[in-house]
Length: 290
Image 1 (cartoon, one colour):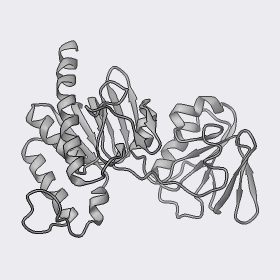
Image 2 (image 1 turned 120 degrees about the vertical axis):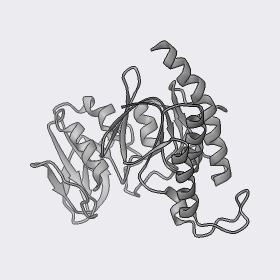
Image 3 (image 1 turned 60 degrees about the horizontal axis):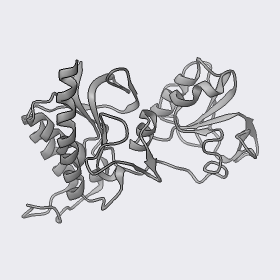
């Protein structure tokens, strides 16, 4: 099914944007894995219009009901990849979604690990996007660092291209089904080795693995990972947008904690609204050109 606008993230920014796009008669979908950072907020009392404190869960659920009443569709899913083929294609754990415009609003806080050599070798064998970089590792031995469905998704993108893939769970419980025949190492990783480029990894028990590439896929694919997969510019841990919440990729927007700033509900709601105001004319123009 083709949507006009898809919001990835069911927090304040994504839901706020959805209220505006749906009221503008855009077919709108909000995809969320959970309630995000608000799930841990027990009492919110610094948001406009609240006579009494409210929990983050209540606030999100109230807004979801409001969105549904306005015709917004909501889906519980985890998006792994964004691509473009005349329109955006979003690949998730539970399905594939097509849309004319996308808002990244999954919050911030990409999972990282303090592993020696990991950051130093980024771009020199350490990668965060299998679909983007698999081509460069044709017939080479690589490894994927992660233990959930996102890691298995990245692994599946590498298998047809590379010589071999080893999954490194870093001492964590494996939470996804791995394709048959894939070698799994469960020992904690203590270092990524190599002078100019990745040459392998060393584990806590003293053993090592030879590898020319390490693909990091910890937890879920957050806004930063998805932005990079789509070709959007980033700066530090933030997605770069202009005052209209537009990235450098036409039709791709970002709002909320993933773009930095005050990191408050009020600012996320406002940024979501601004993103929607930018998405609406973009989608209407795309409709006319189709």
